[in-house]
Amino acid sequence: MNGEHPVVIVGAGPAGIRAAQTLVAAGIRPIVIDENARWGGQIYRQPPADAGFQRTKATLYGFEAKKADAVHRTMRDLLPHIDYRPETLVWGCEAHCLDTVCNGREARVPFTHLIIASGATDRVLPVPGWTLPGVYTLGGAQVALKAQGCAIGRRVVLAGTGPLLYLVAYQYVKAGAQVEAVLDTNALSRQVAAAPTLISQPSTFAKGIYYVAWLKAHGVRVERDVTLVGIDGAKGVTGIRFKASHDDCAKARVDTIACDAVGLGFGLRPETQLADLAGCRFHFDQLSRCWLPDRDVAGRSSLPGVYVAGDGAGVAGADAAELAGRRAALALLDDLGVAHPRHLDGIDAAALERRLKRIAVFRTGIEAAFAPPQRPAKQWPDDMTVCRCEEVDAGTLRRCIRDGEATEINRLKALTRIGMGRCQGRMCGEAAIVLLSVETGRPLENVGRLRSQAPIKPIPISPMLFDDGVAAIPEEARDE
Ligand SMILES: Cc1cc2nc3c(=O)[nH]c(=O)nc-3n(C[C@H](O)[C@H](O)[C@H](O)COP(=O)(O)OP(=O)(O)OC[C@H]3O[C@@H](n4cnc5c(N)ncnc54)[C@H](O)[C@@H]3O)c2cc1C
Image (cartoon, rainbow, N blue to C red; front, side):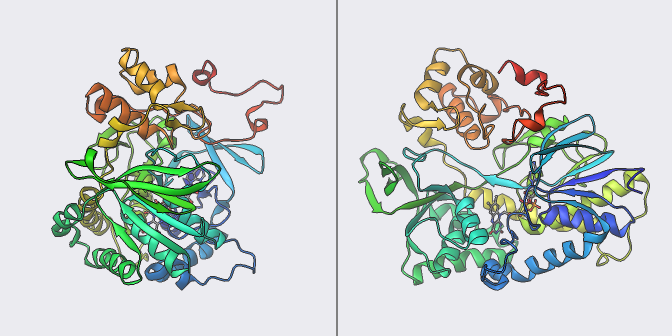
């Protein structure tokens, strides 16, 4: 079947694995590509396979251990029925063909149908000092614990906002790390106001309350409604400064907490670069304040044969990712004219959609309770680095904007090189857009969407060379 219809899934997280399971049950053998060495994606990330790693699933995944185990087992059972390509990065996508690299070797993977289940990454907003050694993203701090069994420092502060803030703090303290404080830029009142919506997923809501209560019971300082003033240090982090974000914020006393590492994050942002390179249409989503690929309820993008599922289509969490992966696979089967499998827990397309709708309601509560701060962009000092790959500071961006040279993000990129480096805007793109919006007084959706370019992540130069040594760099990227 696969020879006739090459079906490819990018991502072996909850969405990609459930999509693969559904396709296999219908008699299709998909290619499943993931840059990680082991399947599971972010939430169910597995530690290295070597015997030296001692932490159990219960320790690694806590309340989610059963779900993690179910997803891991599903993938293990699928292995004989799929073409699984771990440690393989998809760095480009065009005209029904993916560009991949594995162990420095390039391969082009044609497809007739593609499910993009590429997940999310941390939403990063800069704070003075954020480029110091010892500052990690919140997700990075969690990856260190899950995949390496280590903490990011001896005295850690976790700062920013979002559910991951409290979860990572809980996981760190449980693992024996010293968490000096949790600093949330959102007020408790926002979280209380969102409670009627959050209660629509009672067990998830209860877990959130439990983490905070548990942290306080274990003596962890939890400060809410703060403005992060800066991270201190010369060769590495020595402390973090913050103050209360109330109306009289300018006069508020600055408080300092000594620490040697900071985990910083403001929620998650979907990884949409492959969908962009594939040519999918996008729209601005007011709820999550970012651009998302257009999709129907089943996960069909604007391009025939290309589907988006899981956090990569819009952050909604792991349960939603599993459901969306299945739903996208059913849509793909419909489009191929293949009958739905009968024996997958009896869950049909309509049931999947109903459950996804319920989670979407919960998501509105999460976005309201943990909105990323916009106000501090006004106060970002001119000498603060915004784009660390290309070393572009806030002052350079401001000058360019105030001179009237850039009112659109891709113009700002062309003029300053912001977002053109190794991270391709994944770390700095949001900050640049927020700054552009604040400086021009235009809403986020009116300052444009950062266009993706291949390669979306750093790759060795060799796979980009054809046999004759001519660089296969896409035409539009050559003059940048
Ligand atoms: C760092 C981090 C930590 C998180 N921790 C938690 C948590 O503890 N609890 C929780 O409830 N939620 C957590 N989340 C959110 C949670 O991960 C997601 O809701 C859930 O995993 C989404 O599943 P998914 O299948 O859509 O994506 P993911 O689980 O993110 O899986 C996506 C997969 O796609 C692969 N991929 C992406 N791009 C490419 C590419 N170009 N080439 C090849 N492979 C690619 C990635 O390697 C990854 O394995 C976390 C998110 C992040 C970013």
